[in-house]
Every structure is written in C-alpha cells, then in structure tokens.
Amino acid sequence: MTIFPDAIRRRGPWSLPNLLTYGRIAAIPALVALLFWPRDDWMRWIALAIYVAAAVTDFLDGWIARAWSQHSAIGRMLDPIADKLLVCALLLMLVADGTIHGWSLWAAIVILCREILVSGLREFLAELKVSVPVSKVAKWKTTAQLLALGFLVVGPAGDKVLPYNTQIGIVMLWLAALLTIYTGLDYLSAGIRHLVEEDERAP
Image (cartoon, rainbow, N blue to C red; front, side, top):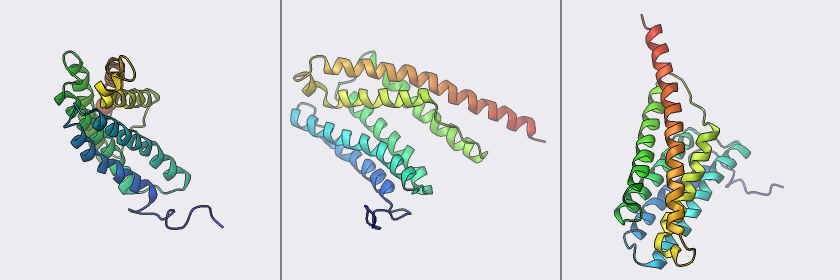
C-alpha cells in the first residue's frame, strides 16, 4: 500500500511537480493585481502569503521531481521560466509603486539584466549541447533574492509590524544584486569560453 495515490505520482505534463510550477506561474497575475493597490495593507499581506506559497513551490517541485523520479522536459523548461517571470514581474511592480526607488533602482536593474543575460546564454549553450551547472553562489543569490522580495512585497504594511522592514528588504536586494553580478560574470565567462572553443573547432 502506497502513502500517495497513483494520481499524485503520475508522470508527464500533469505530474505534481509540474502542477506546482503551473501554480507558481498562475500566482504572478494575482500578485500583480494585489500590488496595484499599494496603500491597502491587507492586500500587501495577501500578496505576501501568495508569494511565500509560490516560493515554497519553487523548492517543492524540484524536491518532489527528484524524490519521485518525475523529471520531465516540460518541467525543466518551465521551472526556470516561472522563477524569472515571478522575479521580473515583482521587481517591476515594486518599482512602479515606489517601494524600490532612488539608488535601489540600480539593484533591480542589475537583477533584471542578469536574468536576460543568463537566459540568452543558456539558450545558446543548449544549442551546443553544453549545460551550465548552478553554483553554490547562485543558490545564495536566489535565497537573498527571495528573502528581499518577501520583505519588499509586504513593504509599508510590514513596517507597521516590523520596524525597518522595507529597509531590510532593500539591503537584501543589494546583497542579491552583488551576488548577481558575481554569478552573471561567472556564466558570461563560461559562455565566452565555449564560444571561443566553438570558433576554434570551426573549419
């Protein structure tokens, strides 16, 4: 007798890890809608709850896929896309409502540019059948980024409960940006190295 029903263990597009990824993508328009009303504190808290749930699914879908051997091509494609869509959408909304402003805009720009850079590099290297493993620093960057966005999503509403909540989020955002620069240069150097090797092999 299995603990989990066969329906949950099914493979393919409707496997549980993929359903969690779909849920993370579906959370994006809900978060965007909630952040259109930045002065309504209760909407900020609901946005935080949805964001935390989305962040948890980011961990769970990979863990379940490994534990239950439910890896799939659509999952490998959608998982990083869902992460980037979530981060980029939230950064844009937080800039629009003024939570991220002034010099902190540069941190948001760095993170957005890195996402575009890495996506482009991964797409090109995939054509060369080259995979770029995720480094430990990249995982630290992701953690700092997730924490920063959590503090900033609740923003001013959180300041009423935790003093300097928004400032903590900004500091974490800068930390994520610094780690982003490091990992971005790492990916870029790896991409350039493979580019040079490819040109040297060309007739």
